[in-house]
Length: 228
Image 1 (cartoon, helix red, strand yellow):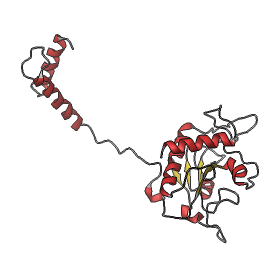
Image 2 (cartoon, one colour; image 1 turned 180 degrees about the horizontal axis):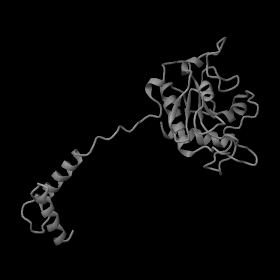
Image 3 (cartoon, one colour; image 1 turned 30 degrees about the vertical axis):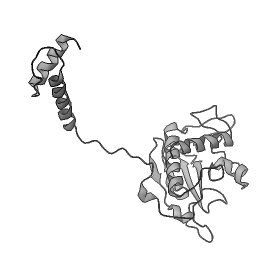
Image 4 (cartoon, rainbow, N blue to C red; image 1 turned 45 degrees about the vertical axis):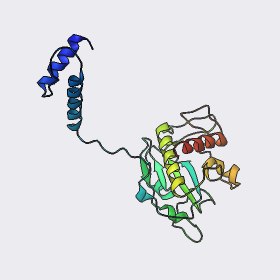
């Protein structure tokens, strides 16, 4: 600051009730002390800011379980808003804006699916011990030639899902491996369980250089690990 600017600043401090000592163009200790007091006063007058969430899923959505050992990620093949059908099939869904939505069935409903129709049926013959998460997107999508449809997956919902999966893995003590954190599109090749050609995910609309179930799965696991 020039001498003229310092004098103007010192006069302003006087005006708002924080005397900086002599108005002489010297930014000394008195002026510094008055400036800090003025800034502190202005910050105290600001309205309280909302807490920034540090997790993707509220703690109340995570019932205690010792029998969950896998997270399988999907897309709904619908719009960017979770539907009632989506809530029946997945434990957690992320809308196009990244907002998390709780499914109808608690995670614990999938501890075992023997003689029980009250679980979230997200992956054919692979629901026991598996947490089903999904992105609300990709209605009308086509794999080849690739067309993401009218509701393409957004990067923000992917990022929020990965943060949520990291939270689930931490809470349920699930290691991040290709057999325990994977996409629906990887289940058939990795776990040898037929999935009738499901391709979520073999393409990521916001990262077109990543192609194939394994490549998308590796991106999924790497992003999950970044949040752990």
